[in-house]
Image: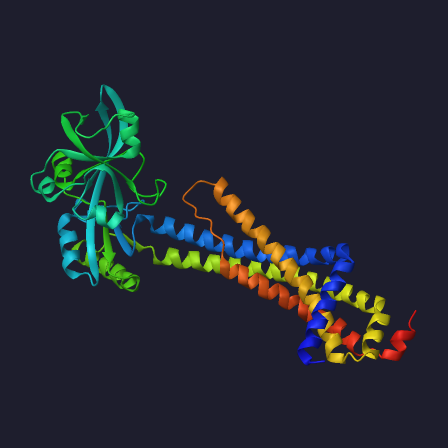
Length: 402
């Protein structure tokens, strides 16, 4: 009989042994099912959470550094305020700059169709939409002529449009603030919600910055955003931004100049730490499951001593006996891992259907592969000792066993 036939025979015996006592095999698989299920869910949840956090952090824009005058309890003077001239200086001096924009905002109560609506009036410079990734839902954004002619036009959030005009189109309608009127030319929303953690709120009305200067009578910018060509340029651009602002203003003036890089790194570190902790729990579960497999296989060997003796007496070699019992352990762990993976996939897609939000649930196929390989490997590893014990049995003594 060829060696291939011997291996095939060992696999058949292993499968037959599992079908003889299905309840025992199923209970042995339970720990592996839980462990592999945990691995897939852990990797999927961590990768989904990391992606979600990254999107929220970058919702303000990508490769961004931003500066503002520090006002928390500090004594400030009018000359400390950031101005369009500062923005021009930054535009010329910042390394790796792609775009730069500034904003100035004030609270405002608008009268629309004889109803008062509380909103935030924000004056924005030309490249604000590009940096903040604003999505125009209807109408248009400001063009060059709106800035040069100081046109009395505005762009409103979809929330304001719905609150003020219900199901009617707001385009072409006017909003009134005291003696100031502006014509709505567009409706927008943030591409990725920042949940009010920036100057963009639900009740926001954007106008060109030159028009804001006419309304407020001041030429200040509360925040300047600068966009770098790549993430690697952001730290250098941030430090240079702070240096230039300090040079152009009083030495006692303090400016908050920050970027999103540190937050993204923190999110990566937290995700990695969570992954390691949760994977350690999953591996511990698999270890417990592997110990259970080893115990069951040792019991199987003691219960099937006569069977092993008969096989050896008929010419089965020690390697073939070892292979048979290793296959039994491997099949138990692999089938348990497969069941755990299937349950994890079903749970993931069920959660995706139930939770309709900006969170994208997707199965981590790397996690699936890891679960299958690791779980099967654990079963084979813990099954090696029982398989070795079976292979070492003396055939004559085994046959005589009651």
